Amino acid sequence: YSITNSILVVLFLSLLVISILVRNLKRDIAGYNAIAALADEEKDEDLDETGWKLVHADVFRPPGTNPMTYCVFIGTGVQLFLTTFLAVVFSAIGFLSPARRGSLMIAFLVLYMLMGTVAGYVSSRLYKSFRGRQWQLCTVLTATLFPGVAFCLFLFFNIILFFMHSSGSVPLLDVIIVAAMWCCVSIPLVFLGAYFGYKAETMEYPTITSTIARAIPTPPALLHPMVGMTVTGIVPFAAAYVEFFFIMTSLWMDQFYYVFGFTLIVFLILCITCAEVTVLLVYYQLCAENHRWWWFSFFTSGSTSFYTFIYSMFWFRTLEASKMLMTYMLYFG
Image (cartoon, rainbow, N blue to C red; front, side, top):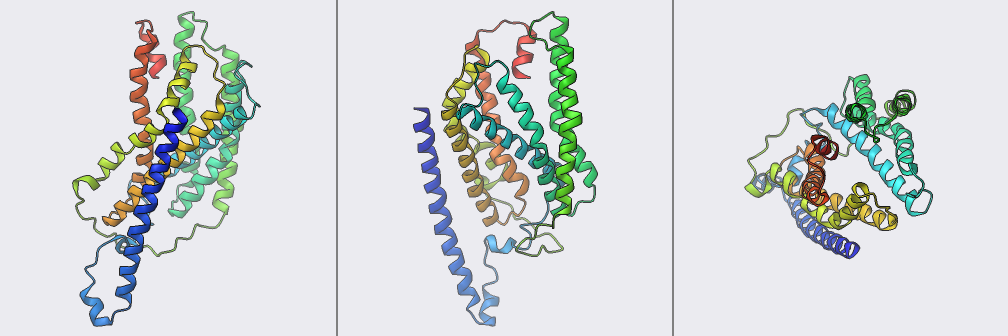
């Protein structure tokens, strides 16, 4: 049922995206070609034409808000995506097994460190295309922002578990090993990837960005960016929510999870669904003459995590967990 539900959602979205884009683009291109064929005096009368072509000189303008942070998030996102994808693939073909205690966690840590090269390369290449000058700070943030926050949370909870004499606390030696792996392997690999990213040629865009940014008209209520960034996450979540139940059960109820083949299929379906929804909504934003699409595209797909968190809040009630504060901190932290 889970796979069938996800595949039907993807097929529906694919047909919807293809039909809308092909029909609208074909109509728009035909209209622009018709204007190009007119005489000069006739063109002047049709200059009030609206659409995505009017923002061609602004569509590749760097984001006006926190471009460095955007590059850091994109590089970290690519790192997490490749880590998760490779770990699920290795589990699906039998290289990793939950029966071997700790093998999956070790694989995640090792793959995450190795993918630091890709994170540094992607963030630096993108930041260079934005003509950023603080490339050292961008590389440092890529190497330390997400893993630093995750490690501090892990250390905080581990210290509390240690003073509560819990068997779930990690020994000090293992904490030092993880910190050494981060500082001595992951961070240098990020800088190595950033070195090659800054040495590579700057990405060339097909249009020239104008000096003055085009004014963005007031969008209709349904095309407001906040609506798209908050509502559209429901669709990718609906394609994979059934599989979330089995994953959460395996994580929190001490059950072995073996169906990584289904997990791989659902993971790919989730990625395809996020991509299709984002492409469709960015197209509508460009048609509304809104050229600020960088952060919009990021949060459109990223809003899926918001609905996943809400689902985890409702699922927590099925655990019948203890009323201790530490239980809530470990689960939601």
